[in-house]
Image (cartoon, rainbow, N blue to C red; front, side, top):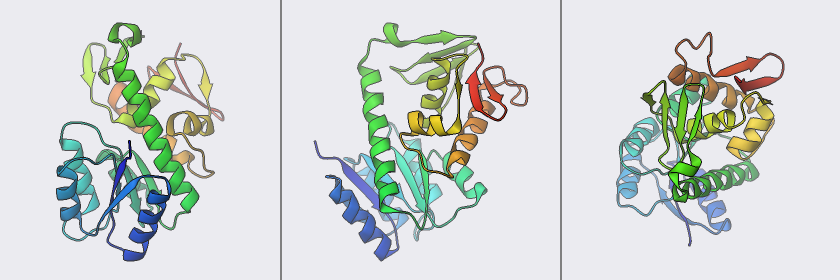
Length: 233
């Protein structure tokens, strides 16, 4: 089945470049140069991935991402933008973006990110097909149901993004094991590029803010100084 990728980018050169390389991956690209028209096309359905610029006419990328996430169903969103400050990254992730790629970018890295997102989509589909009673994980006051993508902390349901769920599952299913940032990028994100360890830090901080009673004294995800992180045994 051919996958359809919606590219919302107002720079003609970048839009054409991304469209060309999406096609090279054997996928069907759909290019829109405005945020409002891009969102309208998304709502028509049939989109498997959104590559979304941050600065757009009509409707900005953060608003488009928020609207995408307010609907039912899950479609991965890759933010593609010239903005590179920590605040911009955090805002994009807060709105529900799955990944963040800063211009200028390499074609190889863009391809790696797109492939990694689809690998995760396929893994999620496999988890949903699995019997719930065989896949539920309960450990240390945490309950995770990958078939329904639901998380409970001390019987309180917590809303996580798809990436946060995958990250927490990776930790909780292997308590006590220490993972470096590089290993987490490989296993959870599906790629590893030097200099992107900050992505792991940002996601872990946001995850702690959702599941920890006191993020400064984590009950679940501990920092192992100089090495990485682990789920407390």
